[in-house]
Length: 198
Length: 198
Image (tube, rainbow over all chains, first blue to last red; front, side, top):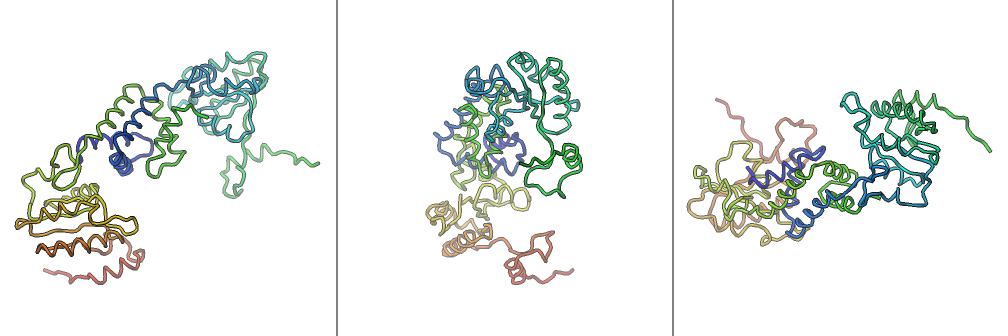
């Protein structure tokens, strides 16, 4: 019932994840109210997307061939943290407790989705392992695909003779024990640690 | 931490209603995965927005000077339904039970937001009232601003000597009486109707 150009705008927004027809309409009406120069600004930003590159070393997003982390001379080059997506790098950086390098796989091995080791950024990771790298930290989500990918990486990285570690699994801080699922409780129990006292 | 062009994209999405940083990032990553021609398609659609017009008669969105409803010769020109937003036209049309004309105010009179009668599409509505129009149906949301606008319209339309009606207020179909708010119950009681029997 709307003009075709408006329907096209709604359809465009409907392609975003989790956006149904009602939300897409809301978004479309917001755009409709914008001045021409604001629309032009939006167009410029979207045009800029195709200029965003992936770092040739780690796979994180970058303006140049190398990302901010790979360029930063002060970072600890003996440690590489493997994550699935660029968002994970940002989540870890925000904690301020990791100062090593990153490697972004750009996905996870998944038998259900038909994603194989050669489909994700693993080869470059292997090429980065040399005598200067002493530890690879696997920081993947503890899901089915994440676990499968972690197991695979552990196998091929160990062959390279590097120390492979992974993030701990257990109770999230601030959570209620009685709300934790069984698997998390089992992991937390398995990985229990001696309380350190001074 | 992301490249500037990517941060710009996130900021762009954050301007959409109800979209926070996390959701904006999700949207931005979806765009990042798109091929260049798909991005170009998006740009074309956004560029098309500035070509969307408002119907010179009723104010609904249109490709041309006049919208699909005002152009449709078969519609009943003796009745005009006044709504606040273009979305409301679509909601009413979907019911399939109204075949008259529409008039889109493009907003509601609001003392809190400082929106006065002259700020919304009222003058054109008055100009449309002639001897061919027998009824104006006010179909505004039963909110504070909606009620205020309805009262104002009722006053100035009655001076024109046209029949002014409004949508009924009462219990929504399929709702639980004990979940209805007090105001709705009072309206439903005030507007109670004799049960028609054959």
